[in-house]
Length: 113
Image 1 (cartoon, one colour):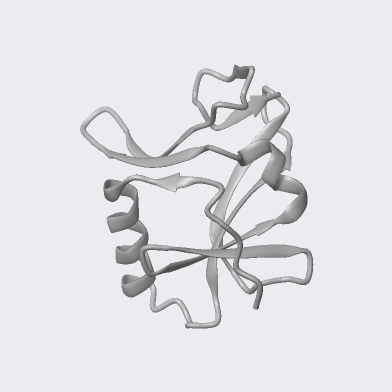
Image 2 (cartoon, helix red, strand yellow):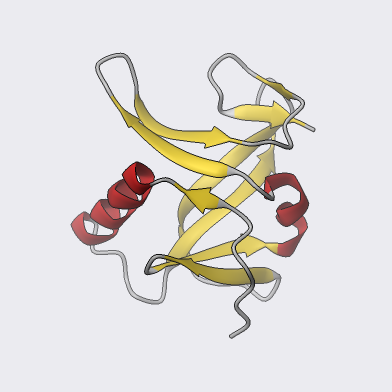
């Protein structure tokens, strides 16, 4: 298992929520948090966040006890990104603060570089 350096940061609030989901949904131990991108959205690319098994084209790293996998091709778009979590009356969900994004949509779920 090749573990690379951490290409992104997860805030304490987001980390708490991820660990809560792992426990509440009883995610199997062989699954890791998948962080990536997908084509689409109003700005060109959307963020992917979910639980998945590691694939051959993935890099793997650990962030404070949470295994994370990311397709190697996505690293150049996500390097330096911060994942946060907001839990307020006006919005609830994960927030992606990506220094590589040159444009984002109004909802913050898609971006372009």
